[in-house]
Image (cartoon, rainbow, N blue to C red; front, top):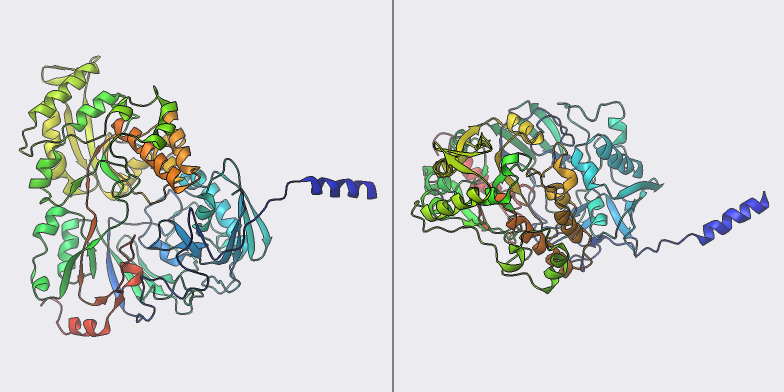
Length: 605
């Protein structure tokens, strides 16, 4: 027995020791942290902001579940308010996180693991402590019973090791990935004891147990949901929370129609509105309450990447699998005419999947990009190396004959020809449907429809309700949609869900296009496993070029500002968060403004 024990001991001595860095109050992907240990509050909050009052917010469509972690049902707005994550991001740094449920984190020097030390004072709303066991449970339940996205997002997490009631370690597999420790910091923690006797994958209208700054207090299914601030919230005095979550009550009111929602806002039925339609912003915000100063209309700078909004082709459909066909159809969108006549000149044409950031490609690829692109020569479009991508540009007259002639030649090169007014190939006619959930997009798609029909394409525009739209997206049952992919300043694992081959056939993924391309998979890996900020930027630009020249989408437009309107009952910090609007968690109801506004009876605004 002694000999066996000695042998086992020697074996353990021979195992490699996993070196760990120091325990830190925060983590950053590539640089130093802005805020030191023990900081009192973020710079973009007012630590002395008054607490209280009701804020009424708009939500669109409907909801039928309070579980936002599964693929079933339409989840209610604001559910993130009831949960805490291990760490929380600052809104004035590119990619940095600070301890929320945890007081410190330690990453292995080789990035093979990360260890979190939980705060002993952290509590669920029922008073029970939050433990490392809850953390391990959260990862396991999300990967096994949550939406398919989670299995993909946490695919490189080999296991969770509970080291003590307040200490947990995540061990990673695969190549060195600087983002993984921060990804685990973003993990939303769920209570094991609450879900023990409940079916996690089912829809539910029972208010779940959380640990965050708010709890659900009232649910009117499909119509509204109300949250109240937890007065004894365990984390209210932490530096990451000081000055935040100032509203006593937050209520989301649901509207199925955008026009009805705007009229409700004018009637003081809710308090805050972010406008996303240029025509409405230009023409519908001239009502008396604005003239009297009771409603404030303004634009605030948006320094965040605006990503890619587009008309996205479903390449799972045979008619869209030829790049020449996609390029031809993209020529039917006359952005210059639309911007002048529909958007009141408010927008910029999007020419990057990472627009409004340093990650966007421009000009020809430089040496760092070519290092990644050259090995893929022959697998990616040749134009990547020889041309700077620019969306087609017209004179704005609405008479895009030159573009349509070019489109016709591209279609002919792909084997399509017009017979009796119909675009045909191998006896099949080209037909497509724009699937929309926003009625406002019909006026934008209609000119595209007319242009495509001049090429012989039969085009239908179909507007469906939110539930049907979500179900068809999850099943990839569409031809063309308005697809949107938001980006951060530090892209990473989510790119696999956007463009990765493994996500193309996974129901509920955001690879709406259906991309299955080994070259793109390799470029995604270069992003995920970048060893420095410079490498990350180069990899993002390289991926951007390849996506653009594949013509998977018809790029739309973007604006680098927030267009907002709100009833004049709020005040906000002097400093705006650089990478967020900050309304719901940094503004507050100003008692003096509230009193003045209440002096005017509703209906007399």
